Image (cartoon, rainbow, N blue to C red):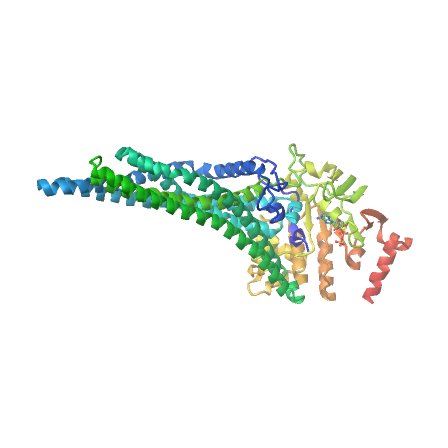
Length: 633
Ligand SMILES: Nc1ncnc2c1ncn2[C@@H]1O[C@H](COP(=O)(O)OP(=O)(O)OP(=O)(O)O)[C@@H](O)[C@H]1O
């Protein structure tokens, strides 16, 4: 069963909110990509597309930080103070060392005491600023992730059904969980480290040059190999993390599908095969992560080697200069302390760099979803419909699911007057659901127009569409929560009395009041507490409450026992009264209440008329009708 079928009452024509400026991603694949072909569309990005992707990710990040600009500047100011406070510490130690030597000679301890007081004061300031900085940036990053999660969720909820048919829920979950976590890692710890590391590097470099230029040149020389190693690691990590994000999405997709279909999995003993598939996909994730991390370990190892070699050279050159009286011992000691601090931030930057590459790959995926355009667009100049009478027309409609796909509904015209109940029948794949989805505006026709009271659906506002057309799909999808809340989905503003009246109208009232907590009883996940028939009745109560002028109903195929079927049938008749209805009918009893039957075959309407007339005509419907009747005997 497709995901859109799981929705019980689905509001048609929902529009996504705009994220960043749409820009078409370049996803054609390239032989130059080391990682290409990992996870289909999820991984296919050309080298030329890299810049566009990076720009998209930066734009998205910019739009997320913008509301918190003030806090971001505050964090920056605090980290500058923090850095200065941290930096002057070794300087006080250098002064204290020299003062200690001279105080031993001159028996004056006051310079030493002042140097120590200065050191302690700078340490106290650094403690306060570090605490404040972490508090401010912690809250900032949490807020950004909170905003982004909400934005993704709002956006995908409102994307068209065609998007959801293409983009499995597992991939969306992957965006909402692992990709966001990766970004959170960057924002939470890595960015703190990056900011302080960069500021530390700049201030230490200035102090080093101030202390002794020749020694500073020795440190600078160590940078040359570092540049090459960084570039190599950057390429490797970026490729690795793109593979990682695509691979984890596949793992989650498989996991969600397996758990969602756990009954089928167990019924058909598919557990071992599913485990094998998971192992395959997970091994791709493991290998991609390992690939990226090896890049990181080479980088960190090289960094430490360069750092220690530079320390040795500084000791050599510095010792030489002390021996020749060019610098005193305090300067060399301070230099060695600063050198440790110099490579420390570089090490931190390497970690940040790693987190950045992972987050950048995640941001690419997230911005891809946020830039996804609606399959059915909101009209620029909508026509107000208000409450329609329910006149539906399909005028010269042709429909294919994709531009290059076959016509599922070749061109045809059909008028359904207000209040008419139309049953769609026909073999599987005949195009009944496709027709129903067009009327609910889950899709727009490739040609022609679907109109309500003469207004094309694509010129109606979202609110008008929701008010006037409700689609009830096969699976009566109930959400965790009370029965009342589930009925109220049809009209969130409904009073308790209106909810009770809806339950009464579909014959559910007595059953619900007999539940332990009456209308407040939790129906449990997917309405697990209720029977299939009861779930259908709750769904009808929703529609009754929504009171649309047009109902599009994909009747449940699951067979109910005779008393339940009768109850459902009566409820259906109540709900349909006075409304236009298009029902994909699977039961003889439903066809019996229809004013008109459309028999479909290969996307065409081959018979159209009142049920009795069609039976009398002895065509396809008559044969179907006879088969139904025999099945009841
Ligand atoms: N999302 C989709 N993308 C591409 N093709 C689709 C999609 N949904 C349906 N089709 C194709 O469109 C044709 C009509 O399908 P449709 O679901 O409308 O038939 P149906 O009469 O409702 O069948 P059933 O009674 O089995 O539900 C079929 O050939 C089907 O394979």
